Length: 238
Ligand SMILES: C[S@@+](CC[C@H](N)C(=O)[O-])C[C@H]1O[C@@H](n2cnc3c(N)ncnc32)[C@H](O)[C@@H]1O
Image (cartoon, rainbow, N blue to C red):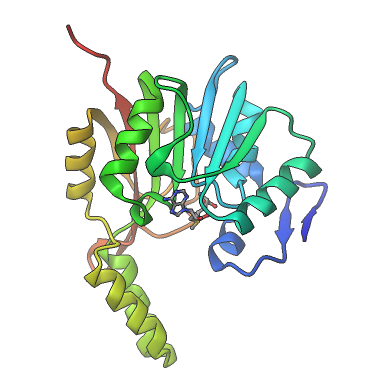
């Protein structure tokens, strides 16, 4: 099911447009992204929340002491397990579960990655859980959050390519508010107790000297297509 070439390029037969897209970039690309946001440390613990096939998990294992990764869907976890076994990565623990109810102790992680996942969850509950398991001063990276532009573009693609189902799904996603305006993200972060450090287009948060090519565009039809935020769990004040 999974093939990995000497240049670290991974291919899988799992039919998923998202996995296909993220795997067009090798783990080396994701490693650079993690270095840019400073998610690296000799003794650090990192969580990949909603890891999918585990592309960030693999990159994180090279840069951190311990990696935990969790996902709700068995078929994606199976791919992640195969990839980590093939690469013989020993510092990764993968498990099935939901972000809204994380099986980890309080104040445990230095960093949390949550890429292309958060808007599909109960946003407040999952943020509260990720806050709980982060150490004070720990950082969270919420990446590839879909804005309204994402779904407007899908509707446009549906019209252009004559795909009524795509139009229907996208309209439903808009009605169900799957997209998350930046203002809502900011408010939820504040309500949970996070301090917003940075916000911007895909792959642009962090050290400006490290240049990252975004996987997805920033704006469509004047709205966010996708964006990301970097935030910190505030230290408790007495
Ligand atoms: C688009 S994929 C992104 C996967 C991975 N982060 C990546 O970038 O390749 C979304 C993932 O979120 C997972 N997911 C959705 N809701 C979840 C939840 N409430 N708890 C844990 N995982 C969830 C899905 O199973 C899926 O693997």
